[in-house]
Image (tube, rainbow, N blue to C red; front, side, top):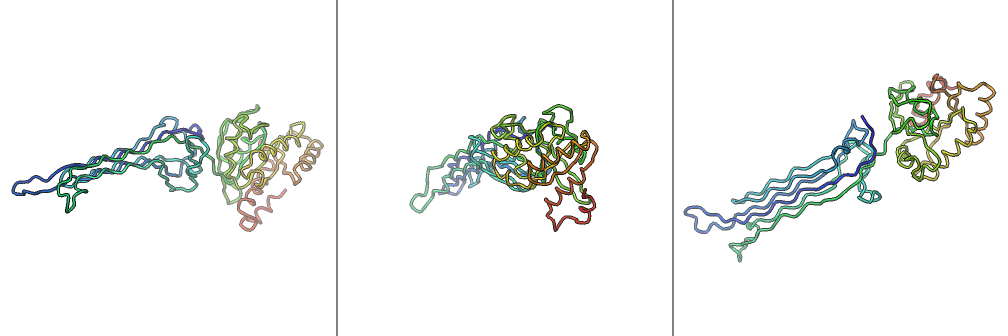
Length: 342
């Protein structure tokens, strides 16, 4: 299934049904009086958050959603039927914006959450509504109110426990493929990954969701390489695993480039817990490895994990480090974590 994280759609609620002007006419009933019923209410257009979806691809093939109109009232005080609602199903993490793509309408973060994007118009009153002691035969019936119509933007921000960040070709997809059943495209050139991927990874007896986003480049916070959209997918991750390609000449500069993009983007990304790992260590000899680990630790100001997504070396240590941050030191299985300490 293709991945789509943004869509523009048009929604229109149903119009209210017209009220009816009618008088009771039956044999032997000389003064029947008004009996025109009210019109039915138009249907709403609602968006509901459901399980089992992780893309907005359905909205590529259908951009217009229109609810049914309310039925008109009828004689004998019969009220018209309400128009049927239209419900749009979206994945957890979907945000709904106004047409300007900036004004937030709703943030769908929980399964079952439902929001009305366009409310149906009220039905018009029939002439029976206007009868009174002084107006025994009203000849007034109202038209139904029109429904609402608007364009809205849907924007998906993946909700994962942990997220992978790094420059292109840092080995993020290889790491995800080595730790989960996700099958991201893997090749030895930059920008192999063109859309975010999710995978469920296991550390001991625990499982958590890991998000892999396409590689970031300098200027990503301003939209370079669609970086601003990709960064949105790690906004809700509890912890970040920052992978640095160990085969690069300057690992410290690679680290600082990504940290600068996170800082410029904002939205809480610079404050997120970060675990730094030097990847592709299998391609380095002992002397190069020690030198680059020292450079990266000096730039990051924290210990650096050593791993290789291709061979699996250090992968479990990284997973348990992520699990400790996600679950908290008291909730993680300390004995299991210590067992995997390097």
